Length: 339
Image 1: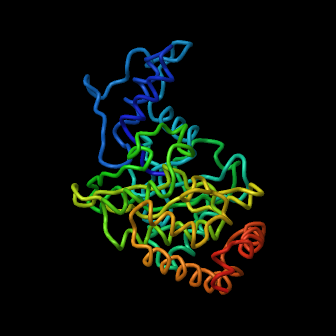
Image 2 (image 1 turned 120 degrees about the horizontal axis):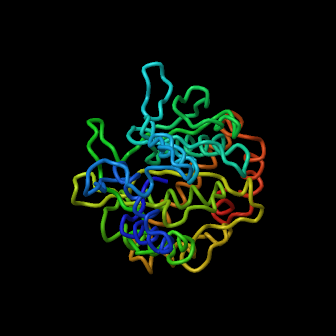
């Protein structure tokens, strides 16, 4: 959700815009001041509109602020927002700045904010590293482009963890960047054991346990979208890597019957393939302590089942999400092993 490789992002834009390099240059100019992490792109000629895009086809001047807001909404339906004194959120007029990310309802799938919030809230209850989150009525978000309300009534908000309270930027990189993978290949070019290897070499035992706990959690909720860009490293001291806080936890099986994990665990990728043998193989290949991995997975599964049984009727999610998870759990070897 948050990070991406700037070198890959720039290369991707240029590759896709060879027939019109002005478009790529304009996008970098327009969005470069509020990128995820600590990277910025500053125009060499100052903060002025490139002459090639300063006017519309009919010759009238373009509104910079509206163009930026629309471009951000049209691509990902995500906005950076500021919290207002009233408790609502405000999208800055320039489309830049803010300490929250707002994710609007999906065009394709019903109730995605109402899916992501309870999954992230449940993860928080289980002790995973989750930023501040919430659901917010779209009517309480000012500065949205016109027409966004027709997508739905509720948005999901998550506090940006690449910004400090004083506004200082914190650098981070997702695993597509770590492995030099283009976004188009975020489901293909690596496995969870590859991610685990990096975490083991760059961080510490606490982060290894956190990684295993998230891996198990997202298997238990049936999240088939934990691709390379949904795992990240962050550099809070500007030098040493740590596993970034959690984001983008959604139960995809509520929308995609028979979905599987986004990447192979170690050798396989079906949710039912994650058993203690697969975890042992992952641990061996990623040079993780096997006992730590197995014990952490076992504990996480037991804790999840206890919390799920207690909380599932109270979490604000659509019934289809609850039913999909209930149907998945008995099919998982981790569940049968601890039940």
